[in-house]
Image: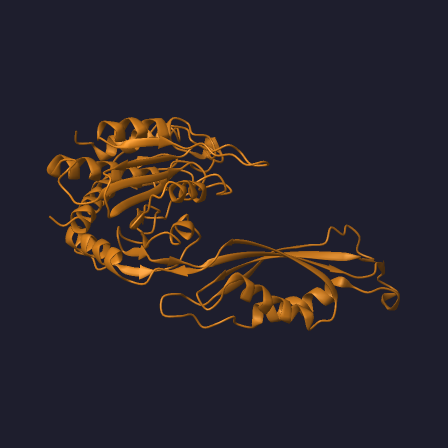
Amino acid sequence: MTLDVVEAARDLIRCPSVTPIEGGALDYMQAVLSELGFTCHRLPFSESGTADVDNLYARLGNSGPNFCYAGHTDVVPIGDAAAWSVDPFAGEIVGDRLIGRGAVDMKGSIAAFLAALSAFLAARGTDGFDGSLSLLITGDEESVSINGTIKVLQWLKARGEALDACLVGEPTSNDELGDMVKIGRRGSLNGSLTVTGVQGHTAYPQLADNPLHHMTRMLAPLVEESLDQGSAHFPASSLQITSIDVGNPATNIIPAKGSCRFNVRFNDHFDSAGVEAWIRERLDRAGADYRLDVRVSGESFLCPPGLLSDVVSAAIEKVTGRRTELGTTGGTSDARFIKDHCPVAELGLLNATAHKVDEQVPLADLRQLADIYRTVLDGYFMA
């Protein structure tokens, strides 16, 4: 069969798969992939304190190389329903655009790959290429990412099944479709700083110890000093303060403590331990009583340009005439797990409306992305 990319995207959007709910999206994919000849495995995972998550791994072929497409069917909540111009789960076409939650992030991309697969297999047949095709689809990317991709990869390793290359369909394009391919991602570290002092009356500061005065001295070097100047494929690392909280309703009380939260997006000059050490060294200068709690969402990584990025770049240029940029900007993605198993690159739709009200994609971009993905498959499995 040959799948129509627009109708496939509409069908997926109509599945209300707000993370971590499956919503019928994996059922739809399993039906399509089974008809294409794939062997499908539904992989539900759970862990204490987290929601149960359903995942899908599908493979066609038994030999290598194994080319994998990775993505997620879970979507973020719609927010204010009244602010949407259409039903966010109706898959409505308005003019030349498809509007709905997940249109960009990332059901449109999944539909494009399904359409590309159907066209590729219609032309070649299930035995018309050397190697295997697979899809790793999670329902846990927009949530805590505990019961999704990382556990599917562990399941594959336990089976002795390897991936040789992986294309992730996250929305990587900025201004025009295909203008950026991600070959790495910055790491992300979240810090929670609590500074303790001695409460007192503002009229008698000598009898108190103002923690906010200490905090201002502690934060100054974090925002004024640069972690680095960037690297060949990464921008400079960045520390951004996101919240300062005291909870002091009075104007004449020196508080006993204050807290602050910040996020660091760091490049390949650092790992998370190095970032934490850089921060603590500067906090220690103030000599104040503080506690720093750190949570790491992901380490920075880079997949150096090679076969996969070359094939993807060539496909973009062939379909669009556009020379792509190999970049590392943006947030984290499940590529941070996959990079430990095989080379990974990310290519998807324009990211401008991701997670927004009236998330939308031009129909022309959907069709063109399907053509790019089909050309990637042709390039990777050269006849």
